[in-house]
Length: 202
Image (tube, rainbow, N blue to C red; front, top):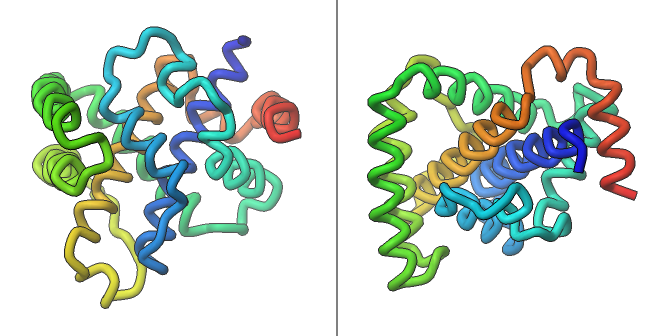
């Protein structure tokens, strides 16, 4: 698999997280496969290989691939989702410079993985722990992500935790994108990215 293709897949993960955040905030619903893929990727901090991050099936990232492709075709489409995705990339860069926070995330994710081994990865206790981890770490960085949506839904039990868990997963895929050589200028000169997405979404 080429480096550019890996970058496209990782960036699709970021957009899948952004689309999930938007759907939760506006409708209270989420795509089951997309959600499970995001949570699994967050918990798997030491994957056997690149494909393991998303379960080795591109269909697991279909929401992200479709959303990213539509956004590149028409930047005005899904402007809120695009804003969330770009904010996740910016937060990832801030996180990379904070070694203490990186260590904290690694240590606490190890404990959440143990919790997931007992309850299952998408159990509410696990999601609550992931949401709390995001709140204690990434949400303390400058330019925190402000989520727009239905005020009633945003105040429902577990909704803040679900949204924060999805944001954490977006940061995880943003980090993967960076590790694969992804840089923000690639989003400006995006011909190679669009070609890869054309092939991935055929």
